[in-house]
Image (cartoon, rainbow, N blue to C red; front, side, top):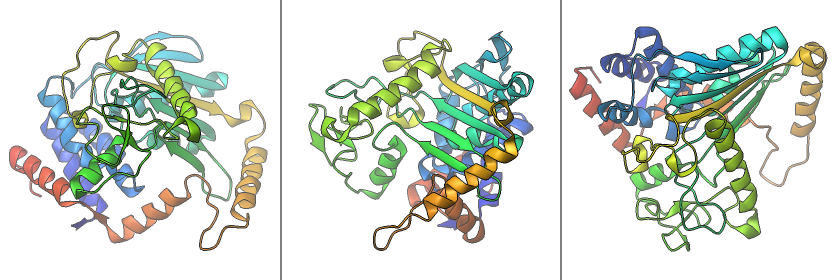
Length: 356
């Protein structure tokens, strides 16, 4: 079914209010979630709403957190999210990063005691309006094997970097360090479709097209899929995100990162830190060169890549292009939700007495 994005965002806001979020936090969280749907990251948008409610039901989500800085220097800080919505904690941390960047040129914030923060790109893009380059990354529940491993030790661990230009739209790279985000597997599960080879392995470490493989003891694969196709590089990227987000902040890391509700299990298990960890940064462009000169060169960079000859039937894109085009289309024509997602939303509406 197709829904107007503003209608879905308002419904999301009402659900977050129903579990006890303050109005301002509920509005912000709804903006982060709907931004995923608008940008085509359906796995991290409205489809995740019931998962946050399950975190709340299991006592793992504080709807009204007292977010605080627990350690800082002029350019760095550690923030404790007080088990709050990562959808709220991460934007708070990015604001601190930008404040520090304003003061000393760059700001780098590691976050502990948080939860799933939605799409990384939303948080990185916050820096754009201030002529800053934004960074955002987070660790996640262990669903991913290192190269040659049978054991799940890492999350999908995304990285996002947003870079402003002058006349062109911003460069926005936002990607998981795995062959695919787990949410894409959930979409295949809802459709009853197989997964492409290279996305997952079974519990014995063999390639499989079973979209339920992770639930059946298998694992997601790092970006690259196997060693011959560069999975060691995806493994390295995921490890960097985990160290910056978890080890550096004092959050959980590696196999101890607590699961999100969609991971197929809820118990957090053994803990080596506090909650889920994030890492966010803001770099003031004029800390390196005049912002106008940099953005003019970014325009030239983007224009040159767009002008590259493409293979038949294709065009050369710059990171951020597909998401921006889809956002314009979905704002105009609505967002198509799969039937299982609609049923989830109807269940939430019935539970909280909200019209849907």
